[in-house]
Image (cartoon, rainbow, N blue to C red; front, side, top):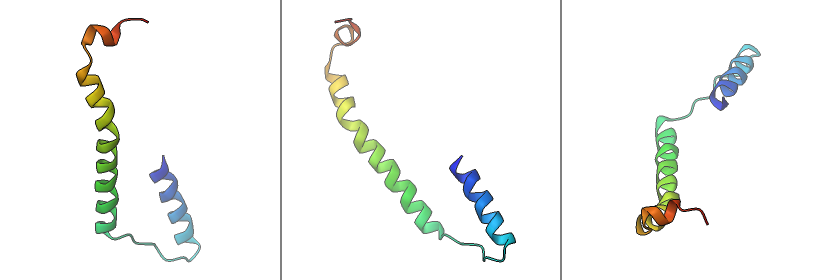
Length: 62
């Protein structure tokens, strides 16, 4: 959704005489890799906790 909105805004600005903005591929790659690393680190602690808990205890209703 965000990419679609961005494409529409860029298209509209290009029609109004603004130049087309460019983003280097290295910047996009760095952002994607950073997001992957952040997501992996954010999931590590809950995953460790879940791995140590017995399965039946984890699904039992309290």
